[in-house]
Image (cartoon, rainbow, N blue to C red; front, side, top):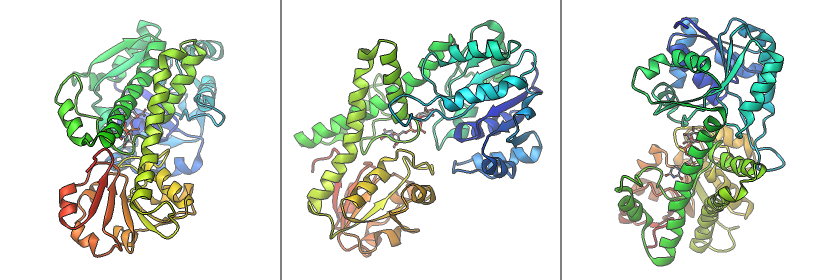
Length: 438
Ligand code: UGA
């Protein structure tokens, strides 16, 4: 297969829009398909429906080349050789398992349009066993085509970089032909020396959830250490630094604080537990229940500190919340620890004012009863307490002397261990952080 291959990308959310623009930038003709006409219209104009650094310019640039188009019409994919399924697999409404509705309907929708020898490549995160059953279904619906799985490891905030220079490529395939097609499509990335891992379908699916489970475990591990540090009079930031120098442990993902959120880690560990139970391997993943519990406890611990700093009864207090997104450099508020804490404090009767550099609109959509401020100054003015809950650079750069003139009380809780404690203290602030007892 030459660089002239035509690709389709089914599902143009975070993963799909990124994949489509990046593959176009590698020279492929790419047809993005999504059932949402508003999203398709925006993408077609070269406008990104969400915030992701660098992707906005890449998308606009690729639209201008004419190689990248978006449509709601599945029949537009008939000329494509390879079809990437990038739809969401959210947590189901009635349990821990993943909702596979969108993945299943994507495969059913592409099937009638597949040409001879076409390869359908799943990128969505799915419970192990899904690929095999979709492959069997496809053999019925479109025997001229094949199906492979190619999990995606991109991080929000680094989506373009992680797609074009990933630290590995993993493909789950049932035969050599499927592997070769994927090797050809990823040739420019492989040429950079990117490790290539061929696996069977179940292993490829498992690699993804295992990776996210490991990352979640690392975060909850350090947050458990934070709890012990608080109880014992220690400092988790020093502890993390010290253990991180051991290369077997490594210093990344040891940032203690209010824990992990977003559209991936929380739902992936839950879906993994649910799937293991179905497979009769429930005990093997029991520990993930504890990882989830430690993570949710971190949110509660901040609320406990707020109550001990202010009062059990919060109704008389104004709390400024800095950060609404689940992490910086994203406008994603799905399962955001920051927003969850803001909502809980609001429900407890406090006056809560939330600021975020990019996440106000999505946050307002979810929680219209919260109060939002367009600037940090408006957010903190008259506050009894500031909560720093998402570590945007803008917040790290704040001048505690300037902020100190706006608030009612110079009291701040750093929920991300990202602010310079000495700087704030020297400006007269009462400064608390999770996992640091003094
Ligand atoms: C995560 C994985 O890191 C990606 O590899 C994966 O592809 C993606 O999920 C996915 O499954 O699609 P992402 O959701 O963008 O990526 O976010 P992360 O960077 O993993 O951060 C997750 C959460 O952990 C954030 O809320 C962050 O604030 C928190 N975190 C991270 C910590 O609390 N401490 C840390 O040390 C690191």
